[in-house]
Length: 84
Image (cartoon, rainbow, N blue to C red; front, side, top):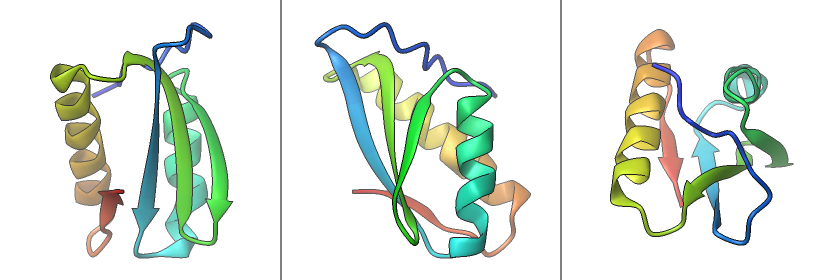
């Protein structure tokens, strides 16, 4: 599953913060998201900020990101990634 990040630089870009329960997994999640053309920045020991080309109020994009995070958790048993 690959999100459609593809940030276009437009004003409607979504910015989402994700927190992980395991700081050792942050770099892996960053690498995976960058591989999908997301602009990702580490903003804390367990937190990242994702800037995407998805519209801010697009529910479909929100579900897609949530699905991507659940797939990441499945690849890393015990991992929890929450938006917030």
